[in-house]
Image 1 (spheres, rainbow, N blue to C red):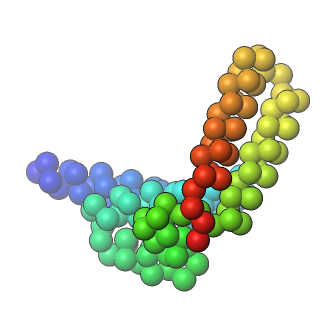
Image 2 (cartoon, helix red, strand yellow):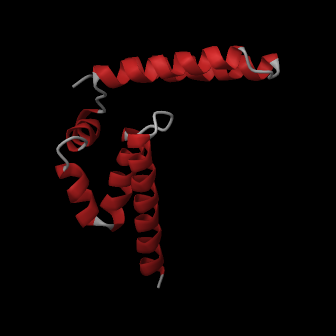
Length: 122
C-alpha cells in the first residue's frame, strides 16, 4: 500500500510539473525548463516511460540531459533568465511595497543570477 501511494505521489508530481512546463512554453512569465527538469526527476522515481519520453524530446531532452550530467545551463537560457529578473526588479521598483521587501527580493534575484552564471554551459 505504501509503495502504491509513493508511486502515485511521484507520478502526480511528474504530471503537475509537466503541465506547468507546457503552460510555461506558451506563457512568457512561467519558466518551462525548470518544471521539465522537476518532471523528469519525479518521473524517474515513479514513471519511467514519461522520463524516457522527456529525455528523448528533440527540444527539451538535451537540456535535461546536460543538467543531469554536468549541471549545465545554456548561455541563451542564462541571458533570458537574467533579462527576466532585471525586468522583475524594474517592475518591483515602481511597486508600492515596503523597502525591506524590495531589498530582500533584490538580494534574492542577485543571488540567483550569480548562481546561474556560475553554472557550466553546454
